[in-house]
Every structure is written in C-alpha cells, then in structure tokens.
Image (cartoon, rainbow, N blue to C red; front, side):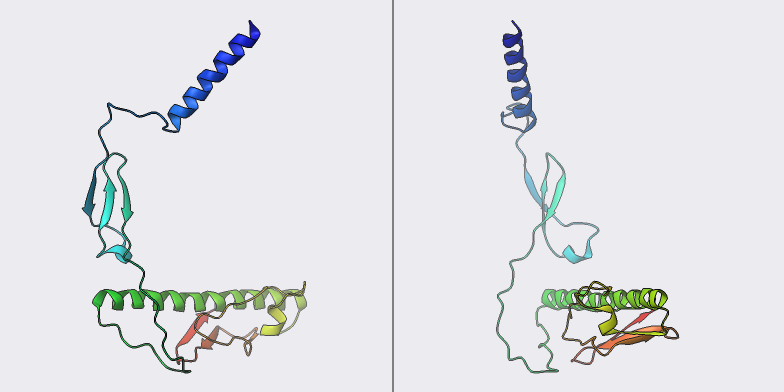
Length: 177
C-alpha cells in the first residue's frame, strides 16, 4: 500500500511540474498575438519597432540587423568618416559616449587604487606600475584601454584633485577625485 501511494504522489507531482512548465496546451487560452509598437522610455530604441506579446505584455525591442564590418585603413589619429544615415549617426554618438564613460571608469579605478595605495604604504604618490599588475601587492589586475589611450605614465599624488588621460585622436577625459 505504501508503494502505491508513493507512485501516485510521484505521478501527480510529475503532472503538476509538466503543467507548470507549460507542456500541456491550454485550448481555452487565446493565442498570443504580436503587434508592433515603439518602446516608450528607452531612447536607445526610440526609432525601433518592438514586438509586444499581448498575452504576457512583455515588450521586446526589435534590434536592427548588425552592420557588416568594413575594413578601413588604420592610421594613428585618423577618425572614422561621419555616417550619412541619421540612425547610424545616433548610434555612433551612443558608442562614443560609452567609450568616454569606460575611459572615465578606468581613471576612477586608478584614482581609487592610488588613494588606497598611498594610505596603506604611507607614501605621497603612486604610479601606474605601483597599482596595476599580476603581483599580489598590486591593487588592479589590469586596465583595458578603450580608444588606444595609454595609462602607463599616470602618477597620482596626494595633492591631485583630478586625473586625466588623452586618447590618440586627441580626446581628453578627466576624473575629479
């Protein structure tokens, strides 16, 4: 008798799990319909249509197809040609903003690590090589350049109020400490 009740409970739990996971069709439920609308709040997808699943009311933006990468001659200090499509121009502005924020985040990490280094070691300045590396006493494992900028000449002292880096194209980013 105990084995039979265990089997019945197991079958019922299996059916419940299958039902919860959606393995059974629900004929009474209306079919999900998809309409096209624009997302309201996200400016990144402002001009993109979105698919809305009416049954669950989940908004999923439809991304444009990824552009095909084209090889361009890489010369130091050369800038990309300005895109002719307004949507591409807007996307390039967003990418540039993200790059600048990443550079600012690198400077923030270095400034914070320098402050901690000076506090821990009792010194008045910290260089890039004091802060970054694989050694156990380094504070940052690595800094990844975004636009080809070089942080290796960075020296932070206790009296500094900001740190700055210049990219090869002349873009200057500062971080106020």
